[in-house]
Amino acid sequence: MKEKVNPEELNLAENLVYIRRVAKTTTGGRRLAFSALMVVGDNEGHVGFGLGKGKEIPVAISKGTARAKKNLIRLPMKGGTITHEIKAKFGAAEVFLKPASPGTGVMAGRAVRSVVEAAGIRDILTKSMGSSNSVNVVQATLRALSLLKDPQEEFVKRGKVAPKSGEESKSEENVEESEQQ
Image (cartoon, rainbow, N blue to C red; front, top):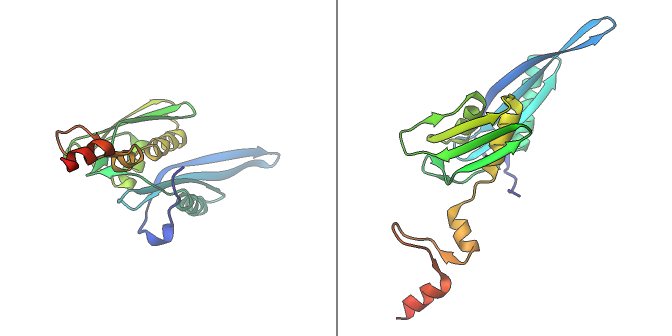
């Protein structure tokens, strides 16, 4: 489980992904309400989403933003892209994220693009499969981003030393033997 991020310390930008008008039919007619899907991020590796509902659009947006600030996660980044390929599913929506070389840009649909840009990722290739429901696609994207692992932390967990460019990773025992020689 990822650690919670304090939104007070960050300079967050709000992004409205989707707004929907819903109607409840009653004996007197229809009651209209709105739901707003909001994404917040600081463009430096922190992102969150929230779904707000209210009788008026500004109320729904403010509730969505408040929920998004409560659901912030931190993700590992390598340059302007993600550390490795990842695939995640939420409901019937499935999202595939792949790191891209510098200059590629963000190749993504509306829902995935809003999450990725709010996180500060500048180069990424994505594919959204299954459901096109914006709420589920955003949740699948955030699930994928939360499953990303930092390579340096993984090397430490596995008791290995991070490789220099072009070398294989070494265990701590092999490093100690080579230092003694």
